[in-house]
Length: 106
Ligand code: HEC
Image 1: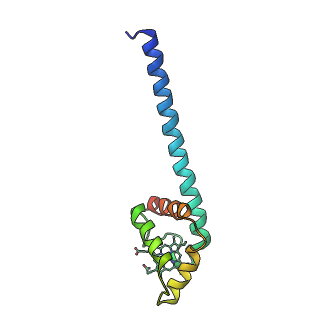
Image 2: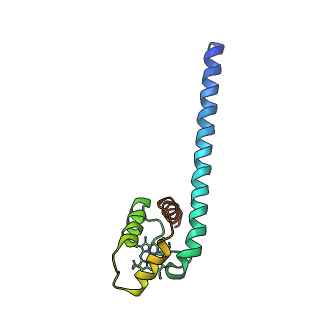
Image 3: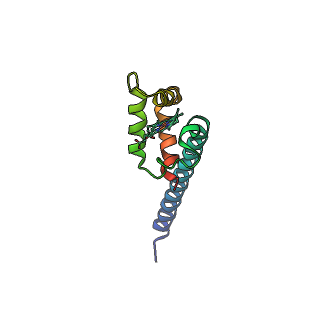
């Protein structure tokens, strides 16, 4: 049906596609796993193990909210000040990983 060369190219492309797809699923799982660790270490005391208010929210929204809390000047409430302290040492990348984890929670 196919010219053998075409078939080889086709199979090679399919292989590459599957390889990349599996890699990116695995990478996404790694990010979520790192996010889970960070969340359980730094956020769980206030937001709870199920993160009711945060679970399943869009990652962009979560990242946005974390950034604005992080950058807030002199927050009025003690709890928000403490949340800032929890966010302060985390990089943008780490915040993204937490957001990916929370987004995946139901
Ligand atoms: C000392 C308590 C405390 C800690 C620790 C804490 N937070 Fe919060 N967080 C709050 C409070 C209080 C609010 C504002 C009120 C609310 O939405 O519950 C809030 C709000 C948020 C919001 C915005 C929710 C929304 O929909 O507007 C996000 C996202 C969030 N926290 C993520 C985190 C992450 C991620 C961590 C860990 C790095 C963390 N928080 C650690 C107390 C805390």
